Length: 332
Image 1 (cartoon, rainbow, N blue to C red):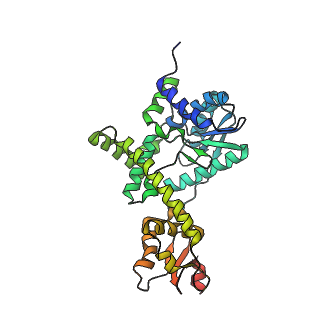
Image 2 (cartoon, rainbow, N blue to C red):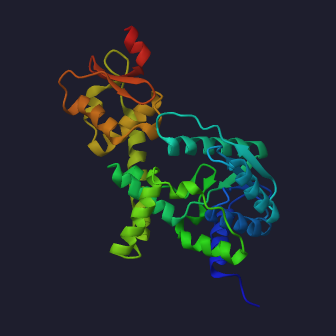
Image 3 (spheres, rainbow, N blue to C red):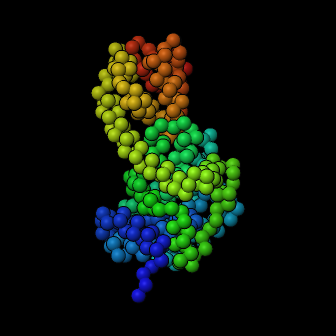
């Protein structure tokens, strides 16, 4: 008796490997948009969940940003239910404008909605349908921003309860899996909108694949894996260095000389840790912000206070580097 289509088998194997350490009886959700990647992932979970002793369900997010978005979400939920997934919830994302751009705002709202849905059903794991192509696009976007190793390391396979089983598979595999199932997935019109940087990166990646060879995207994804190992190690050193930093002479902030003595590769990461401790959203702290902060040590000529995202002021004062809310600076 012939086995499943190779693309179907590949997606099932990818999911099976990530269910191996999930406690029996746990709820595992798939975040399904109705597109080919998440539909192929949902189908793989529906097949593997009962064989792994877990309960497979789905969460569909309606961003409310397009006409018929509610209908598209309900269609995706219906596909998941037909696969046998249960529970299947459709949730509305509250997309708020932050100034970071529609892509970033929608992503933040999407993950917040998924987290709430996962909490409601007590999900141990949430599967996300990013593929190797998404990883390559992420690295390309990082390169365009002049980002460091952390940004260029792309998306991790696992972060907290979010897992990306398909990160090692190309998008062609998920498309082939959907075809094998006889499913016609939703084609998000935003994927053809050049106003989005990711869409432009996707088209550029296709051009680079054509000009430099069909393995270019896979090479970018492989580079991300290698950089992630380096970034993880350097960040572990930075966490230790931050813990060892003394406070300033007046008992506030961190000691300027101790911070300046750190190797630059560690110090730049400590700056980000300090900014996060003060309340700055890490995703918004750019390489340019870090360079400006480091200039407080390496190119000091009376500048400051500097501003970092989150309404935080950073000042060099009394032999210390002090992070404080902008309102405190204004009242000082």
